Amino acid sequence: MNSYTPLVPVVLDISQSDSKSPSKSEIKNDLEKKIVGEGKRRTRFVVTGGSGYIGSWIVRHLLMNGGDGEADIWVVDRDPLPKDLARHGIQFLELDLSNTPESSGKFANLFSELVSGKSDSKVVVFHCAVTAMYNPRRTDSGLVEEADANIAMAHTLVNSCLDVKDRCYIVNLGDGIVDRTRPSWFNPYRIDTWSSTSSSTSSSTSSSDTDVNHVKNEILSDQSKLFVGSRSSYVNEYAYSKAESERIILESDIPSASIRPYGFVTGHLGDSFLTPALRYNGGLLHSQGVPIGLLHVDDVVQQALTKAITREYNGISNGLSNIYTLYPEELTTLSAIYDYISSKRPFRRIKIQPMIVLVVSHILSILPRITKLLTGTPPGLSKSDDALLCGTANSLTVARFNVLQTTQPPPHPSTLHIASYSPRAILDCLLNEEKAILEKIDLKKAQ
Image 1 (tube, rainbow, N blue to C red):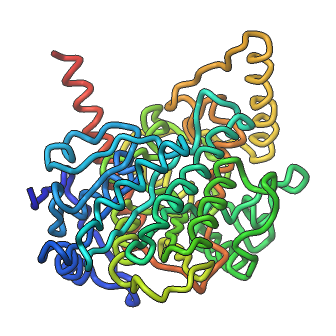
Image 2 (cartoon, rainbow, N blue to C red):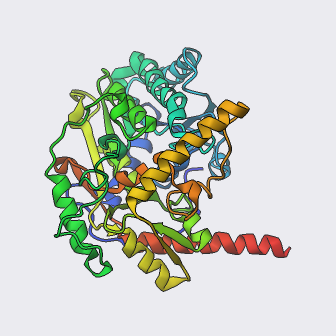
Image 3 (cartoon, helix red, strand yellow):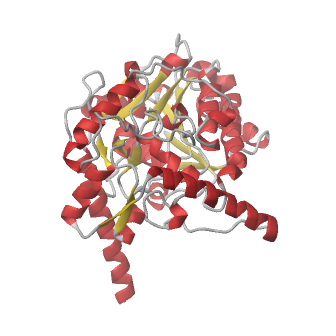
């Protein structure tokens, strides 16, 4: 039960990793020392939201690095385990962490069980549990319930770990969206919201690299605080909930760290922001000069594992200094992404001005509320139709379009950690995965 073969081969086009971070072989060796050993010295791992995308890949990497699913790894989630993880005997606790105080009692019992009679054992918690960033059955203003659930889960986690805080360490999976503010309706081209319109920023495809560097330098000069503004100042309710959850964990008495990915996290058949556009064979081109960061899920997992093995469990002063950003060294743009896709397959560009997107977004965000008032039920939209770049009117919603801000460079260069996958390698991965999915669909239709 202690070996695992990846479901999808890892992309091999990997550039030089950040010299400050341990190599993958070092991480593997250190993990094996921690989780393969005598019972009383074994480190146990708990992954909240382990049935989800990033959480499940943390579990797979633990298995690939020598973890025994039956003895070392617990998944806590309200959704069932992925089938491949269930086959490896991963311990599973079906629990809705937002349902307090019932959840707190069951969760606390789990931690007590993991350290009971094991004086030298430690528990590392990877907190990945989160409600959907965007629920297509709700309007932009209807995400309050999901946001409150995310905050409740953070409270449940902290309260459950208090009794074993000296033997527990939390790695929180945050989100770079917490550093962004709502777009200005009166100045939509502000450098910290969309893109620059100064003479130094060209809209031509050939100068994409210049555009990226210009915008990156402008944004990195902003030394804003990590936690500022009221609830209404964030991009959306999800962003507020991630910031508040992060604060709850880092300001607790439990040793902890938080990883903030900046950009689109994808790979290994995950939820790609390009998938709907690829299905439609075309995408919206509304901000062609905006820098975009693409992150492979392996990079996010590697950083989470790094924090789990390189931090001491005792004597850590919690706080904002324990936030680590993850951002790719090489940026790209929508225009460059579309160029590359077009070189591989037929693909249409649907050009549209950002101001038009903002106005239409505002109108479309009001219509579901009117529908709900008249019928009592908000209209349902499919995820593929209601995506950022798919080229349909439904994609022009404020919450979805604001997501583009999370791809911009983080405003905290001192905590930057560089990813290892190039944009081209990730795009190749996405295109190959999409091709495989479509071939499976065609095969089923033929049968």
